[in-house]
Length: 261
Image 1 (cartoon, rainbow, N blue to C red):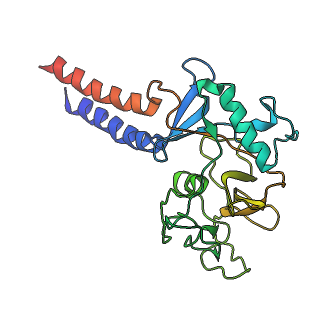
Image 2 (image 1 turned 90 degrees about the vertical axis):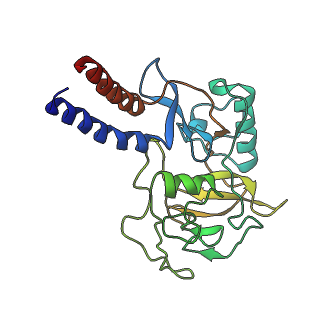
């Protein structure tokens, strides 16, 4: 293998390696067509859950559940019934769909005071880079928004009280592979107060006075969107193209080396 060939192969590896790393967090599952690059779900290998690719699936598939509007919004109780019906229908070959989880960021109990730096469960910046709880997986939607997709809170950490200080680049600027992800509010699976009238929500964009990156509570009777997730990897398929290409580049090096011996 001559110097030119070696340089070219190494350059290919240097280019492809970052692609593999970038694809590592969200891996396509259930392709629309065999061998295609459009998927109906994405496996999150950090949270170890699978996101349905369409965050507004309820608008097109009700799984026999009534009470869902034309644009896919529904009450919290309806959302719970909807994900259960998805499981009963064995959607994408999987029978355990649910709403995204919210757990106390301190591991003990929910903190309801509003914060803008991710120090409590309510407010902005939960898990955002540079925050006290950076990278936390306590809220699956917050982790997706801040860590996986790399979005910033609309209201920056310098905000105080009811005053939102807009930070540069804040809001839902990166949707990743979820191309139809709207700036809506989505239900989480947990109640805000046990047995109460509210449930946790995460806001991907501005609605009812709140902005992108906000986690809080909403009355269960309010119409919100529901995004289904499943625990674990719903299907094992060949690795993404970036990984395959990276392996192929290594294979080329090996083949060229053997050929030159």
